[in-house]
Image 1 (cartoon, rainbow, N blue to C red):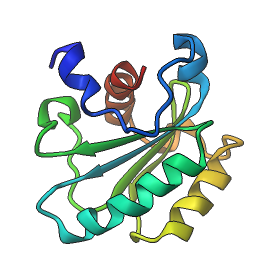
Image 2: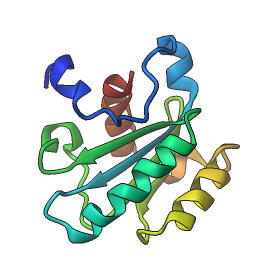
Image 3: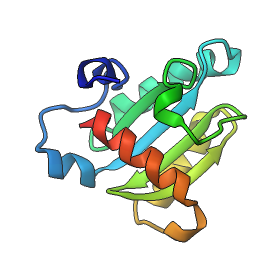
Length: 136
């Protein structure tokens, strides 16, 4: 995937004027969904609203069908699946119920880096590196 193509994956609420190092230090909230999924399509409005309310965070909406090469070897089987990361450290990866309050609680819990990096898995490290590249 080219750098120009990956820019299309960037969430419209993400600031692009921050220096690269500063941007990578901000909490990343990535939602992995599929266009064919009704719950994902409905959840998109919630995700977009949260991105606008939290400009200090980086939000990415990733369609797993359009971005399969980016996700490989990570399997996403339930939707929405959320990845929360701080810098190059994944903090949370898993499916959540598609409710605003659930994501808000996750964001609040992981702002301080409460979860151990070792609990997530090495394949998520690779996914995070690829997402960091397109989020900058």
